[in-house]
Figure 1 (tube, one colour):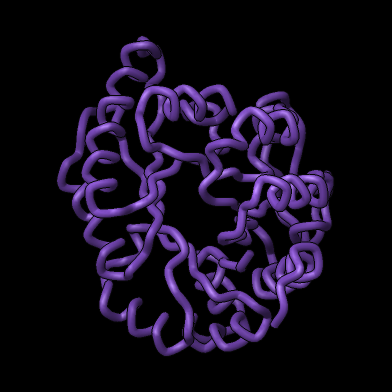
Figure 2 (cartoon, rainbow, N blue to C red):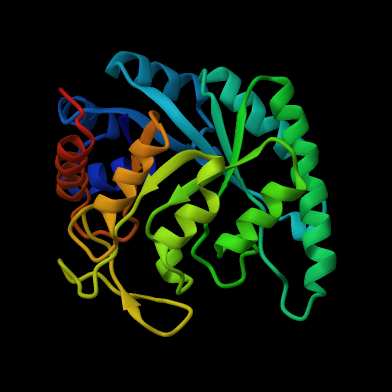
Length: 270
């Protein structure tokens, strides 16, 4: 397995350290992190991002993109996502379908989103890309639960799963139960832990059942991270583990702590 981290975290860490994201990449590579997880909205300067990755000896591990398919298809954004993946030699893309509008007929919205995902997936597969959906931590998301993710994967041939280790807890679901439900379709992994208290004064996120949860380094919270990594190894997963912890007050040290844990647990040698 190999390590990646969200570029958004690197940018925030750079702002906290009063330097540029590029300045931090050698430190990340030294910690065993070879990939950056990107958002399409961060890629206005594709050539600049590609040059930054190449200079650091890194690659794009995945490109995510927020869609609003509740409003209908968006072929221009589909193509922009596919083109960005091609420009960065990135094998994976992760669309986020959008949200249920208040008062909408959820069955109709789901069917429309499924059709939009099918359109994107067919175009992406034709370019050799891997398409996956993650468990998204928003109660209005159609993929907030394991069942919601499975529905899309069942409806659209070729769609896989990005298993976000911490987001099932947001939806009050057991992460190991979700793993067993989805394990045959896992194509990518987001390594997110959760704490029941703030480590550095971070504000809480409220779960669907009203609990307060906080960001923390992977392996430092209550998510069963050891068991999940064991199960990933058991199914033969050997791709990126992406460090994620939106909202952490000390981004760089949280990234490095997560990397240390993952290197040790996954047997990643520097």
